[in-house]
Length: 217
Length: 205
Ligand SMILES: [Zn+2]
Ligand SMILES: [Zn+2]
Image (cartoon, rainbow over all chains, first blue to last red; front, top):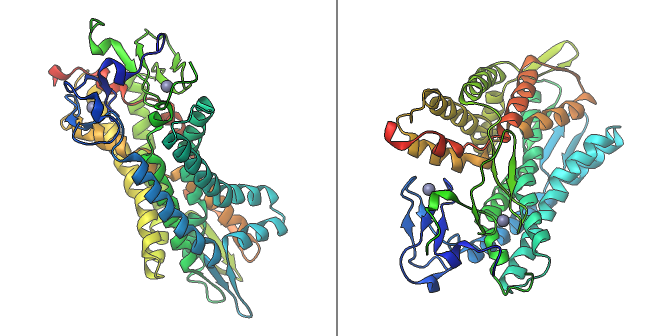
């Protein structure tokens, strides 16, 4: 460990809220990473200083699994009902994408497909991979894994797209006599999925990627 | 450990690597050599410009919320809605969770962000810390990814295309205000507001 020292080795902690560099609590580098009793308050902003986010693995796993459980009904159940005089149509996320594609808006179909299907799946796969590889202390593709995490953080909230589409259509068509748009339970599960995956990616600590055995430098 | 004061140091949030703080020139971005994450960037915009942008964003935001977003027409009948129309509709249609999500991510959080930012910058302009500086900066940090106006603009576009197969759809002024808001948000996304901690010294408050 020559050129690039890490904060733990030098007895320093960076505040995750305001960025202030603080001297470590005296003693006990052993308490590292587990969030047990090594907390002190940042002198500048008052947030709790920890070497690593508290219970990062457990919280991230729990939130990710909860999100995945919500994601199943979000896809299986219809998210929106459109009714006119002669027919009633229940749309799922996928059927909404197909409808856009068929009705001649392939660009939007791809955007919605990405936001509603690709991004959540990517989040499950990416966070799952990050969790497993970091827990194993693997030195495999660390730079790429770090990039993957930042990508997940950056695009995560775009999944909310379909929720907003349903809300806007409902409000618009509600007072019309001839037709009706209603939200169906799928959209609630989908909204919860997005919130839970966002919370999951926030509770993962990317510094854990670099905490294992040093095989890279 | 004999390595200078902690203020001269910078720690990468993403991998915990410690760096000596470099003086950045205009528009420079310092990146972590271990993991590639951004460490620090130099303000291209001063407090005055940021304040002007925050106030503009606030005005545009109010308009985006008052003006109707889209109008539908079907056989001589017209209906339009605003953001609050959406929130109320979802509440009444047994999708209260969605209603709360929409209200938080498209109304309350963006509004809080902009007013708090305006408040902090108003004082920062004069080199002072605003009353409540510390808690407001912490809240601002926590609000981070929970404002979604830019996602909503795309969502409105999708909704317009979907509705277009059954109705005459006219985008209303609200959606243009939202588009302008997205532009302003994009500018703010490039600004590291944490620099306010360093820019405004504590004892001058
Ligand atoms: Zn702090
Ligand atoms: Zn780094």
